[in-house]
Image (cartoon, rainbow, N blue to C red; front, side, top):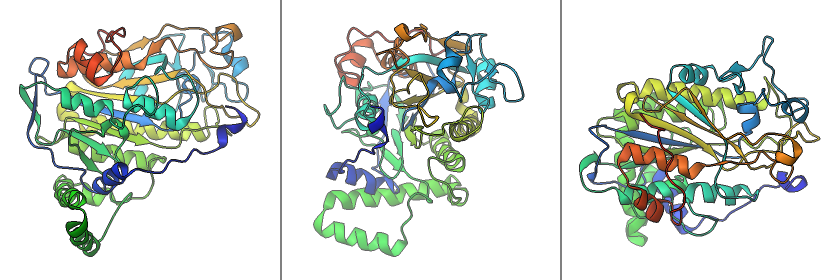
Length: 415
């Protein structure tokens, strides 16, 4: 999709999504004490960050050592030298200069980068790509549950994860955490705020006509009280949505406070918007640089907010697919295939580029236009959650990521 890539896809939310949205204003649902067999005595935390719109991995982590890179990136190519030089990683791969926090974490062994990665999806629809990424299925439209929700439902008996299980952040919780297992939800007050009178009226209305929504709303109010107790009420009133640096920081702050709380959830999912850079993407500066700077600040916020449990934490950053290798006529990039994923945290086996580099010559590109994916992001996710939460390969292949028995969990991603 090149010319048609700018067309926005539209979906009509189902009642299930509306239910999730209503709950996520404050709390999707209350989760009773849940248990699992921990990997050792580790009190693990896992946060999944979805970048909606398709991140340009060739700009976020440019392969400056590839001789075909500069010609493909005319107008937005990064360089090794100069005042806006890319940040060196391993001499072949570099990092966008807007991400000094990630560079610091990488150098300190607390970040790894998975390049030329993708799900099994090979088309270029945002909604279908996000569906596959978050559902964990082989194709779109196969289920209305997400792989993190099925992971929660698959945790065996053992040590307590939390009385509140997992967390979905946003006005509508991401698909990846929706499903039969109850999940807590929270949205920053700037994103969604209703007055007490309206809440009471809605409660009365739902109590008469829709008991399920009434229960969600009741539990929602309980979560708002938790958020206030954790000190988020005042700091979360600032401006900025999930596609701005300030919005990303606020969302990250809230997530870290809840996930880092002693009685908070141990698993969370959230989304940052705005990564669809068809026009005026920019190089060292510009639209993408601003977004990457916001993400970089959010990563630092996670690190600071989870300080007490950082050594047992993994933040995984993923996107639905990549962007074209060649720049288009509006100095942007169109929907592509291969991209990058980031693993950050004290539990990450870091300072590593995890990549089987396919090359950027025309014959090496996927359909002669996109970075060819050589690593399935599901294998990476399997490796992370297997080590953090003690799930076996068969459980991951049959329940969490169905039909992936031939896709082994990546080894050694967690220390």
